[in-house]
Length: 228
Picture 1 (cartoon, rainbow, N blue to C red):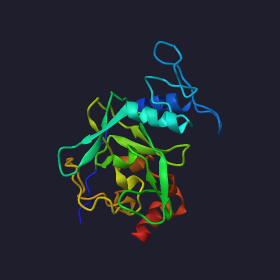
Picture 2: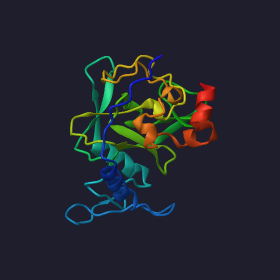
Picture 3: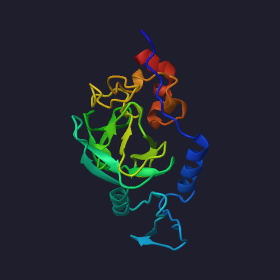
């Protein structure tokens, strides 16, 4: 059987790391706030936390995180079989946090809408994260956040009005949410498939953009190949 085509995801790793570090360098130790200055150098307060209006700085204030999500994206109809989707409300650079994931509730088993956080640990996220559609060539990648969920970070330039997507296989060892993929990307694999089906040279795996639990002993490629 031919190896699944390698994704066409392209981004400048240097630009991504530089932008992402700009956001993360404001992170303090546990319990402290994130803070930054806006482009004009003026401070803007939201729930006693200073927000950078160029970068979506994550805060440990859930209410503020929800406001940032509302400012960054909109939930709209895709106009097709995929139903609703999440669309950028402004332009984003590689490395910017587009959606902050927040846990709604824990699930006892994997569901079509749950996110896998660890082996046998699943959770449902609040909107808009739970609405973000799968794509085999996504413009977002997941990174763990301090809320115990995932943030969705731009891995390429995203224009205002564009749909934002991520690859479900980067968090789900086995994915039941997308049995038939409708992303229509040139390298569409036909279904999300799950981490166990991704080729080893997939750009998201090479770059380390997949759930941390998959990097543990059970998540090594040797174990993955044995389980698969």
